Amino acid sequence: GEYRSCFKGAGVEFEDIRQYQYGDDVRAMDWNVTARTGQPYVRIFNEERELTVYFLIDVSTSMMFGSAHSSKRDVSAQLCTLLAYAAHHHHDRVGAILFSDIVEEYLGPGKSKKHMRHLISRILACKPQSQGTDLARAMAFFQQVRQRRSVVFLFSDFPEADYWDALRETGRKHDLICVKICDPREKILPQGALVCLQDSESNDRITLDCYSSAHREWIRSMAHDREIRLRTFCRETGADFLVISTQEDYLHQLISFLRWRQQKNSGTGRPM
Image (cartoon, rainbow, N blue to C red; front, side, top):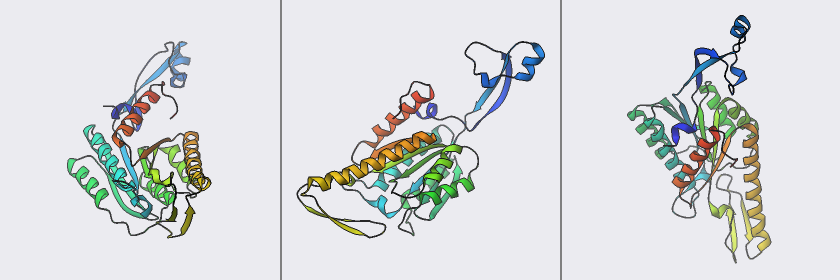
């Protein structure tokens, strides 16, 4: 139920004018009519309620990681399924871009039941051709295929890379929600062991002495700092930021976020 009130339409259309009332937005003033009549008038608009929602989904090798029952990619696919059906219920159009360090698959927007079934099946079945991650390339491709303002969910584990300019540009033109999918084991290593870590995309390896609390704290601190940098950047650029853990109830996390968005749009929400 929170879905519709969380997102604004793609634009507005002029409906009427009326005399200014206390509390009206001065940006809606019709200065020509005001000058002609000598009384302040404002323009009234109707918001276009149909949305176009895009999922930009990281399907790189690192998203296959999961230390428990679900991988990061599993969780992102399940979230997309929930959001796609919510959008369909409200007659919104949904499209998707599946990417690694290349664009793996583009699914243009649609809103029929057949389209939704096809979109979800492709999200679940996609077998990426490449291993790496290039968020900047994915966002650049999205800007090419979609100029009009849309709601954009970007699902990724957001590895360290130079995607800040692309994130800023996408957030400026669209309603961008960055959804970081994480696994707790990426932050908290087991105690009392030697752990060999391998980068699933580059295959680089490093061995850590997890008998050392300093080494464990170093890993935790790096992951925490990276998340704070991304959260801060999103806030500065007008994008929203949501962290979803593979080992927590993702439905509860999503509903909490949508309720927060609802409050934010009404002017009562606090920063997440």
